[in-house]
Amino acid sequence: MRTYLLRSATRVSRALLGVLLPLRCLVCGDPGHDDLDLCWACLADLPWAGRACLRCALPLPDTALIVCGTCREEVPPQAATHASLLYLPPVDQLLVRYKFHQDLAAGRLLAQLMQRAPPPWSCTPLVPVPLHRRRLRQRGYNQAGELCRLLPMPVWQGVYRQRHTAPQSERTAEQRRENLFDAFDVRGSVPSRLTVVDDVMTTGSTVMEVAETLRLAGAAEVRVWVCARAP
Image (cartoon, rainbow, N blue to C red; front, side):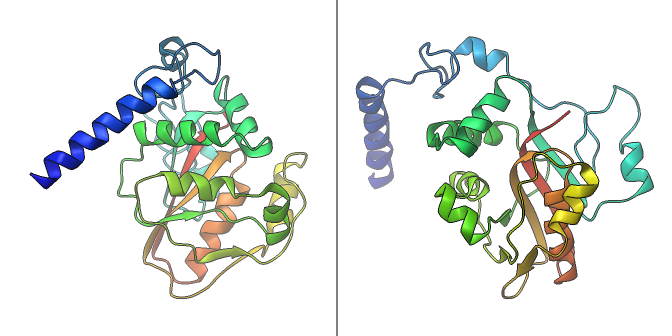
């Protein structure tokens, strides 16, 4: 009886919120759809990730390939990578708003979309890619940490960024790897299996450095889950 009453109260609360704060599409402004701040047209137009490399989530042509050529030549430290979406419109704009313009509503929507396209493995516990304390003070929040907080899975906060690094966006793949070398460390006992979470994966330098750090610290298997992968 108590459970029924709680569920009924939850449904009533959601209905009232829907009246007082109706959902609005964060892309075009039309009414939201399916409990999302996204209209039906924008939801239908989302660039969901399809067939991709098992190791790095790079989109693959529709062939028998499971791992891309780059990962066959140089195996990354993570056992697998899953991207829920591709870094294409409108996902790219939503991520920029969330990451650089403090649009936490966009972050909530992106976390909801990640839940609709989760990895095909058990994601416990999650490990957010950390920010250095200086960057965290500037931004006010860690975008990967907020995504983890909004996902319904346990989170392990044992990874920290021990060295402040320059922004990655204007650097080549090689420069990104050099920039992040020895940037992360861990505190405490490391769980055997972990899933590293980040907002965007471009070259993969950041998540690979975190995965390598965790493996060197004793993790038996590290996997990666990102909201969006640059194709």
